[in-house]
Image (cartoon, rainbow over all chains, first blue to last red):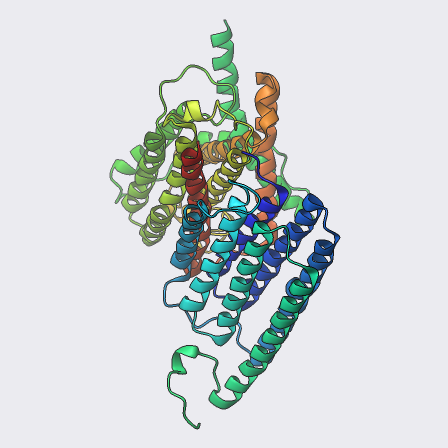
Length: 217
Length: 312
C-alpha cells in the first residue's frame, strides 16, 4: 500500500496534536500546535503538487503564516499579559489523557475505513483518519482542561481536523472558501482573546470550572 | 573455525564496546565544557585500577552484598549473549522478549537487594527511587519490543532483529518509534541525564550512584562494568532499530552491517553526551511525565503494528 506525502504530513500533524494533550505548559502547547499546523501547511503544499492545483499553494502559505505563526504569536503575547503559564490541572491526568488521545488516534483508523471517497475506494483513508483524530484530540483537550485559553487551543485543533478532512477527501476546496474560513478563524481567535482579557478582568481568573454561575462580581 | 572467530570477536566487543561507549560520553561532555578530558579508553584503566584495590566492607553487611554484584554481572553477561545487540553473534538459544526484559529486572532486583543490604540510609533511599522508576519504565520497554514482535510475528528477538522492514512506510515507522522508545527508556533504566545526573556529588539527588556508594574495589569494578555493558546492550538495540528502518540495510554484508551498528552505538553515546551537557535534570515529580511520553511512543509503535497486521 502506498502512502502519499500528504498523508505522512497529516499523520505527523495528528501525532503532534496528541502530544499537546500531554503537557500542561501553555507555551509548550503553543509550540506543538504551531508545529502541527506547519505540517498541515506542508500537507496542503504536497496536495497542491499531487493534484497540480495552484490555489492550494496560496492556501498553504496562508496557513503557515496565519495559523502557525500569527495565532501562536498572538496567544504567546496573551499568555504573557495574563501571567498564566500553566493550566491548573486537567480532569484526567495529562499523561493518561495523552495515551487516550493515541488510542483515539488508532480508533479513528477503524472509524474512517468505510468512508466512501469520491476519488475511489481506499483513497484518502489515512488522511481521513488523521482529520478525525485531530477532531478527537481537540475534543479531549476541550473536555479535560480547565483554563479558558486551553479551550481555545482545543477549538483550534478541531478546526485543523475539519480542514484536514476536507483537504484529503476532496481535491482541495476552492480558494475563496478556504480564505473565508481562515478569516473566520482569525476573527474567532481575536474575539476569544478579547473575551479572555474580559474574563480575567471581571473574575481575576480564567478557570472555566468556576464559571458555572454568572453573577455580578 | 568461523564459529571460533565469531566467539573471539564477540568477546572482544563485549570488553571494548562498553568501555568505548562510556569513554565517548565522557569525552563529549568534557569537550563541550572546554576541557580536554580523559582519553576514550580511560574507563578500562579505571576498571583495572579498581580491580587491584582492596575492599572495605561494613560490619553490618551480610554476604548478600558481595554476592549481589556478582549476580548482576553474570546476569548482564548472559543478556549480552542472548540479546541481538550486535549484528554478528555466536550461536545462542531462543531469546524470548519477555525473558530478556525480566532478566533485566532480575539484575535490577539484585542491585536493589545489595543496596538495601549495605545498611546505609542513602542505599535504601535510592533503592526506593530505582524501584519506582523501573516500575514506570517497564511497560514502555516491553511494549516497544512487543510491537516489533507483533509486526514480525515472532517472540524471538533474534528472528525480529534479523528481519528488516518489508519496504513499507509503516514498517519503517514502527522501527523508528520502537527505537526511540528503547533509547529513551534506556536513559531511565541506566539513570542517565534527564532522570538522574550520573556525575552528581549530592547523595540526596542520586539514584544509581547512591546504590553503589558502599561498593569498593573489585566489587565496584564489576558493577561499573555491568552497568556499561547494559548501556551498550540498550544502545545496540536502539541503533539496530534505527538502522533497520532503512530498507537498504538488509542488502549490506555482515561486516558493513556490524560496522554501522558499532558506529550507531557510538553515535548514540555522542548524542547522550550532548544531551547531558545541554539539558538540566528533570524534577523528580516531572519524571513520570517524561516516561509517559516514552510510553506513548511505544503505544504508537504497537498500535501501528496491530494496524499493519489487520491491513495484511
